Length: 336
Image (cartoon, rainbow, N blue to C red):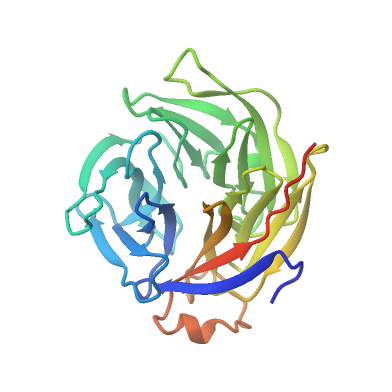
């Protein structure tokens, strides 16, 4: 199962509800996981360290949406998150009526969360993710309009941060999604293009004198790797010398090792034969990196063709479709 020795151990953490598709994922201050369902407007939590833990439904947004597209922690807040909802048609690949919500949780999961509507998003294509870079500024990658929006959640003002050809899906049948996952580090904004199979980054500068701006673009887009077709999920190591992403079609995890001096990446497969992985999160627990992988199992879509050779299928079928896997990884620290 291992190609380069960088994965130490693989553990099945939990089985999420059957016949479902999960994308959003965050580690809470109490050690539990918060996750959002794409094919239903549902928010769940569970204990990643307890294999007997049963995922608990926290909130249903059914009055306003039929799916939750993604979520992210709100910086500077304790157990608070931003959730992106929408009206989703996965079969016809149509997405509309996006809303950004603020969700406040408590240590007692028996207490209902406080859910506040922030804004209805207008004049966007498909906002496929949400990343808060401060307690005020949110970035929204738009997979259909090939750009990244900046949103001030205090004023509701939306502006264009960056638009680039590298965010566009190439022409051709089945190339539905261009710009997909995104991460923001100290000096770069990282993103993937799913249909192009590329990992890219853009130099950025932090804006200290205007909290409504947050960051500005400081250079041209750099293509780090171009050999990750159908990539989904994006996890960035602390030292930014490694990126992890997955193939939902082929069922494996890539590691892109990045040369600090050149910024170029070398791609290797570190884990194979997963049941349609769709999200990855690299979380440090006691300074040891753990890669959490959300797998959606057997998804029936006319555009979603999966590898039939899947040794994990029997495990996935315990609950028919969705599982969360934890992988302990070895991280090599390099210095320029």
